[in-house]
View 1 (cartoon, rainbow, N blue to C red):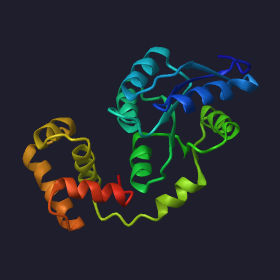
View 2 (cartoon, one colour; view 1 turned 45 degrees about the vertical axis):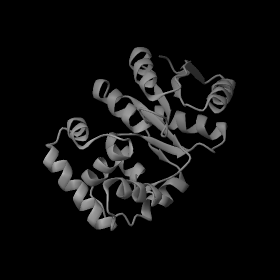
View 3 (cartoon, rainbow, N blue to C red; view 1 turned 90 degrees about the vertical axis):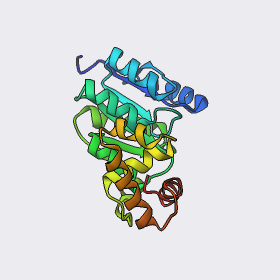
Length: 205
């Protein structure tokens, strides 16, 4: 790629109208080319590994495989992939998890397309970008749960059984039960599903 070549991006979002609008608006100045527009996390993994874009622009909240899960699968195969994650809700727990995965950019889906273009250029140049409103939310973090407790609650929220959670997180079932029990105690809830629901409502997941 030369300095005059457009930046190649994959644009992944399950909201068809928004995805189509961004796919039309982002390339307008000629510096960006959208090479694929997957509408779910699983397809985002497939096309990103196939097209090897300069930047992956991906929605956090998608049905089935969400943005974090998709990025995990992609970076397992392609550790150097540059990622800009978009979200409607700047939750501190999500930002923490995304940064641990190596996500370089994080911004609101309500951002102007021109701003998204600018951030894509920043990331492509090797810099990081976290939108102010996302960063502001991340410092107001009253979450008492550990990362592993949050991991198990996230899997619970997706409907997985303890045994399935253990397989997905590469843990023993007894260890998963211990994390869930601890999370229930810290949140003052009676079931793991209630704990997951409360964690979601508080913005910890």
